[in-house]
Image 1 (cartoon, rainbow, N blue to C red):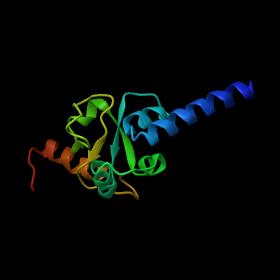
Image 2: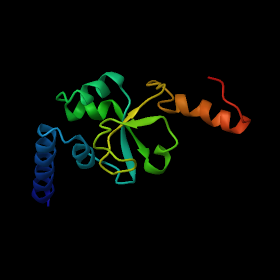
Image 3: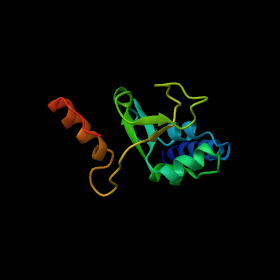
Length: 128
């Protein structure tokens, strides 16, 4: 049984390595998925987003360290943009998104920008 599990893991690791070498980041995202739910990968680091847009080589670990998973149904109401707008379509499973608002890495995460939006919706006003 251990050999079967290990062999399957080796095959998956090889798929991830090939996708990463080919700079197929949405595929890397899918292959590295731990929780299989309807979420999208959202890169939260502006420097990494710019590197991706310049088509620079980015390791999967760096991509995973500086990204979050957000429910697909919530993406349309949040401050995100496709990283590769020429190829990306809204709500496409292969779309890689960039977070375009405040992010608190120590506590609130992307909720640092969402909480003021929710409060504004409740109170009926926004101040920019």
